Image 1 (tube, helix red, strand yellow):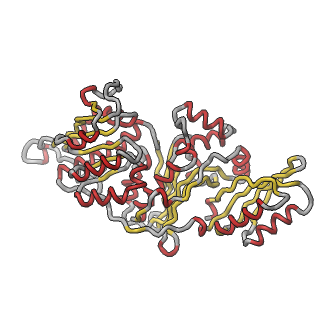
Image 2: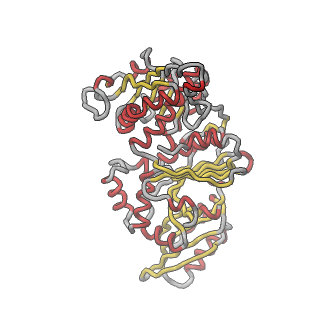
Image 3: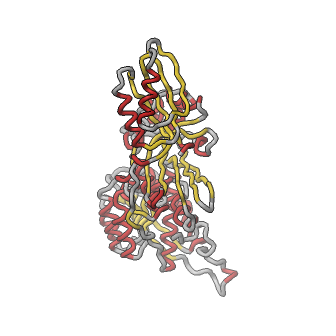
Length: 451
């Protein structure tokens, strides 16, 4: 689908010496930007910096003509006051707006505005993961019917050119699985808990002080942000209609320094992963949860607010894309790449349009097979360990290793299982909670190395 000139020799304008005369005048492309926050302001700044170079290289003069914001009377550094307006619908309808860039976020009114732009035959660029994850099928259909682009690189990996890589460079690849660290807030928190020994509460407070986490961090720390991105990645890779509601989702708020320490002792680190994979029979399994990752795995070294996606394919083997997953300029850079693509496609009269998707059969989380880490706090007395092991045995969950440490009259027992079925592990946990000697069933983590 990629057009424009980003990384494409065919999309570049030939130098004047290679033609019969001077290079043709760049085609003017008017851009209406919906949203003037951090990313919107950064995009206006990047266009100011890069506009002449883009025109020379790509043959399109990309000009912002309006920026719709909630409070147009408020001064916004980097955004000329003459571009500001409070009427987003009017921006979409303007005849001098050729491409609409949506940076509002959320579902509504973003969905209605995107549909209106597509119905008017205008290509759309968006960084809105929520609307793509929830209503991607509707929007893709509208873009195909209108014969225009719907581009959303910044919705998944920030500055990382992930969507292009999955949709274009790996279009001929049979991808088995993608695993990603796609939320910078949770990765920063887990990095601080790992390297600095911070508690979850302290690490979250630090992330909020630095602007990595919102005042209400639930979308990040409970995994919902990553789930939306996982749905988008699965839809691209497997050509399937996957929404955020199809994604099994767990967050990091229950993790403790003890979990981090035990993972380290076992040669692992804990990361919040978004995972999408094709399983036997063609079903698609999509999930977000904290997991133990071996310290020698490439994802284990992704720290602080950085993101990365690890791809496993039949022909390409293993590869990883890494970079900044958030921030004004990094995200605006990805938006600008899509904008140049859409403008170039308009200039050539050959929009790409979203690839078709097929209904997905979602693999239930209960049928997942993986190894597990489990922390139990029990009364420290004879026979307890045998009783606990008996529960594992009754449900066919095999114990690979065990460690015990005393806590006065109680003990903490750490188990690592062999690969087991999720439903069997859940039944094991239910029975353990009813054992009189078990004081608490602590963290339960999946172990990626053994999937």
